[in-house]
Amino acid sequence: MPGEAASARVPCRRVLLAVLLACTSSTATAQNADPYAAARRALIAELNDEARADAGTAARIDRSAIALLARVPRHEYVPASERRNAYENRPLGIGYGQTISQPYIVALMTSLVEPRAGQTLLEIGTGSGYQAAVLAESGAKVHSIEIVAPLAVQAAQRLRRYPNVATRHGDGYYGWKEHAPFDAIVVTAAASSVPPPLLEQLKPGGRMVIPVGSSFFTQTLLLVQKDARGRARTRQILPVRFVPLTGAGESALRER
Ligand code: SAH
Image (cartoon, rainbow, N blue to C red; front, side):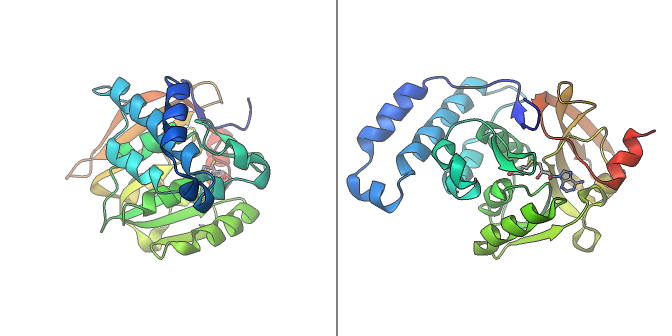
């Protein structure tokens, strides 16, 4: 479906069992405190199943990344009309033709960059603010850029609870020079190729995760690692489907 950021795979193994387990173990008090607590636990159980199934593959997700997702209330990052779907393992519309990525993809991108306290990170495509929040839960300092002004404003409000997140409205193609270099860069919109300014702003030893491809149907999630001498090595992780990177930098490339 155009406008959706999703992986080509839609993992949904053992969802029913996970839902049942989560429902029976939640107390009435916990449900009153957070009506979505059981649904969130079910999603986390599903992701943990995925982690077991994918262990050893390039697209594996880590327990530590899943633990970060467990701390972020996804229902607070989606429009009211999508709140009841917030803990389904799929992308959801957030308005302006954009999407909040599938939780599995957020977990995978987080696993690939291995965020840690003390690091400086850059995200391109703040969108709902959910991925930025997940990265911020690691204790790293997160800088996030969004090109659609109303989304940038809304996400900035949601992310106010994180003193370690800075947001900006602008074209992320050019990165955020004032805060560079970055230990890791997460690009959440598909580019036609790796933007040179982003590669430049990555630290030696740093990691960038970015969907690259010419259309909605031929994108690959790439992990770009810069070695200590500044040479980049690229690994293909899996086929994905993200909304396109827009803006002047990217369109100049596409028109060539
Ligand atoms: N990380 C987001 C996913 C949002 S989808 C989340 O967790 O919700 C990708 C986002 O990238 C969209 O909001 C889109 O507007 C934004 N985007 C596209 N091109 C961009 C650019 N050149 N610079 C910054 N943001 C961009």
